[in-house]
Amino acid sequence: MSAKIIDGKLISTEIRDELKQEVENLKKEGITPGLGVILVGEDPASKSYVTAKERACDSLGIYSDNRHIPNETSEEELLSIIDAMNNDPKIDGILVQLPLPKHIDPDKVIMRISPEKDVDGFHPQSIGKMIMGKDTFLPCTPHGVVKLLNYAGIQIEGSHVVVVGRSNIVGKPVANLLLDKSKNGNATVTVCHSRTKNIKDMTLQADILIAAIGKAQFITADMVKDGAVIIDVGVNRVEDSTKKKGFRLVGDVDFEPVKEKASAITPVPGGVGPMTITMLMYNTVQSAKQRKEKK
Ligand code: NAP
Image (cartoon, rainbow, N blue to C red; front, side, top):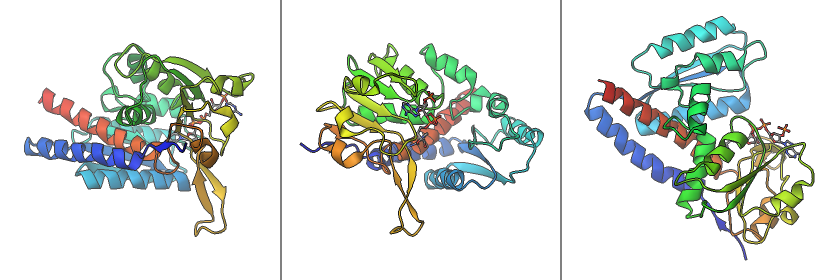
């Protein structure tokens, strides 16, 4: 049986329609949500992510202050832009596109962003609150994964979730959210990484398998239990001379054969990717609502 495709684009559109309405309501009360977007350097993938984020702001009526600054920008200069955005009442959220050039310490940068404007959810304060199950900005990709599961009607509570990948931005937080004692959690979670022995023994136990590895088509059909739900976070460029750009995007999952075994699966592109940007917009709107409450 072929799996149901979990359409991240469609789910994203539904959430964005609701956000658009919320932005209109906020504007009527004199608040325009604002996002500061900082891109350092010319990395093509980063540029395309930033462009997509700026477009999303435009389409929802969110004000965006876009700073595309050269690769040789000093750490001090970048920190001073963040300070200015922290103090700018028009800005509700600040996004610094990662990765940063080698001479800039990403931890210093993340920690400089005011937790009140940390719409990426990367600040240690946001992460600490998330782990404690307190209200905070949730990191966008893990939050997007949870939303996808909710919209697709997948039972999380009591399921065995296996996450492959333990990064601070995807693997660890998604594992934590699904483990949390909350309405979107209560799963039993196993986290695998590059030192995990017999990874296939682990993945075969998954009711919900989340791949966040960064290796094209790593998860093959023999690693997947019949009827499992597959969430593919990976975005990998593989050479493809038939494409104008010379490459195409594939996930961490070998989509076609895995689709025949799974009960539901996210495609790449069009699965988790659109949700990440949508949850960034969601956090920005939440932050603007908090500004309104403080007025
Ligand atoms: P990352 O920081 O490079 O982490 C990759 C993780 O995969 C690490 O924990 C690593 O283990 C693990 N891993 C690598 N090789 C492995 C192997 N052979 N077996 C088992 N585990 C292995 O990557 P990331 O930032 O989490 O991103 C993961 C993927 O998601 C990338 O393709 C990225 O582009 C994509 N992504 C997509 C979105 C989106 O919006 N769709 C957002 C963020 C990231 P160790 O810890 O042991 O090294």
